[in-house]
Image (cartoon, rainbow, N blue to C red; front, side, top):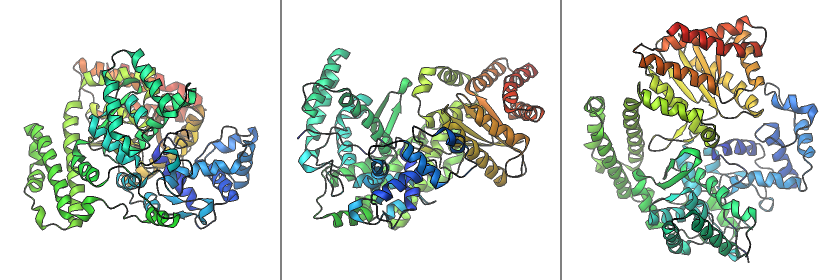
Length: 597
């Protein structure tokens, strides 16, 4: 029987989006997941605008993209059937598949009513700790399992992919993007871990790209047991590998280093080594055996399974904290003395802490505090490097100008570049990126849906910053009303100063501009807003002006930015259309530049 790759999901590329898919499924909890419910689920995803079909009837396009208006179920249903799917219920099964695989739900026709597991309910709650949830989830992911027909024992599966990948990466000291994509999705039996490690070392010895290409083709032919590779067989490992990496890194057990033009390298997270070693001592990567489907469903539904070594032994939890304190000690000692001074009381309290007197819940809380403290050290160290760093800003400007790099950037990486630019301007009380960060302070996931990408607090104004690489019509409903709502909530929470929203996109869609112009000139939910829409070329121009100003020895403060923002807002009130207003942005920047000279 020919082998197939394991996969989590090719339907949902960004794992954070699963929250929306699960919230919609929650509406169907308790309903049998038969063919009608499968179709209803997909229709609800369209109704909630979580899923955008390829074809939308002309008569419904304006309605679909106008997120101020509710999309009636009957219209969503018509759009669904307009796709003319060969197997309509299959679309719902595909959409729910990653939720089932990851233990967030049990939605299978053969198993009766839809169940949202305890882990799934935690995932969609306000208290969700994404990294902990995905760790539990991915530790449960195994093939074969009683819910999966595709990844069966007959097809050679005996693996817990997350654990097997940890073992493999530890053996070979990290993986390149090509190595991960080639050897992780094809690792379907934990007993092949050592053999795969040898393959990787053999692959690394090859110097020429031609020999490496030959190795890749021969390896995949051997895996698929074919003489000629199809294009799909050649491409799937790289698609599945990239997708799996995105899920794995959310656990914070991996460190992913990004390079220009989209390349990356993955290794184990050094600050989690003690936890990883404990896991690998307990689990070898083999799939658990379940006597029947019911026992597997019980396992999926139990939030306490699988048991983690440090949840069983308090001494092992203490060892994790000791390891983390050693990392923090090294980080602290590398700080400038001036930065150490402000952190010294907290640092010494952690160093002198008597772990033997703490209970397990107390140790859990201390671990969170230590990780938060370490991030603070990292941020302080980076801030010192970034502040007024014209050379670093020049490098970022070059990245933002390079369309090839921009096309390969993850959207969350684009957000983080904008955040770094704002840090370099060096005039804030506080700037906070709301994206999910790994243990090194690097972005690995989007800000929660109810938060702006970045929050900035200055002496004379406050601002949120929203950034997107989406240039399609989707930008309109993903970024217009949500951005306006973020600004309204932000302004209500931070009274006493004007609240701006600075929206940066590689290209701003005309309909997005129209929403913003209306909000600035006439108001959103009864109040006029201060929204400044900038295309990437506008933002780059502002950064270049900052560079020239500082190089010429002139001061540059947030008040000067406010002058620019005020002029753009004023222009909206003086124009009769959103298009006229947006054309004025470039002129506002030019006049502002002259005023600085």
